[in-house]
Image 1: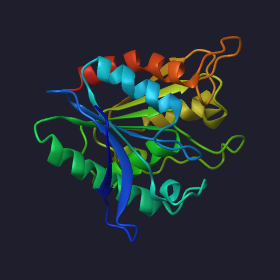
Image 2: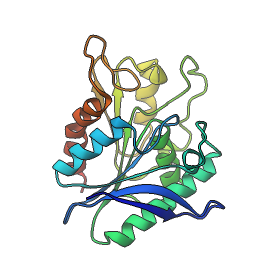
Image 3: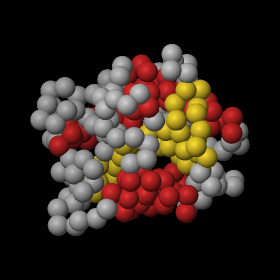
Length: 219
């Protein structure tokens, strides 16, 4: 059963909203949303449900700007601090479990920055890592990636405008200590595939097997 709660964070807002859905004995996947959405986006609901069916506990949370009713992210430092507070809370709830950080686009990038700055997780999963703004490959967001020590999985659509050209993206992943890419053929930034109209929840759920296979391989 889902538990709606407020998780303490070391910010003036004091807490962020989250949904905790534990599975007995399951490792935990913490799921962050993309920049323009929130924890209850259908994509994340489908993704989380599919993970729980595979035996993983899940926690979905909002960054402070979403709880405040804004659509544009605040300072990156606030999101990094939020990641720290959320992971600390999860470790208190499930001290024997491994904790994996995952996120759609912005949420995943913030997780990588938090881990590069010292956050302790067992692995990271990026669902559409935003390497650079669309059409601006001269502004890559890669400086911190070599400092991320845990295993990383980049799940990316082949036509995602945030990772073109592929060679630049592949070079960024190659700069990591332990990382690999799983391609979704024909997928865009939201993993939509031309000619395959599907609800967002189904798209999210279809990514879960790739993620489960990766997480199962993490030592």
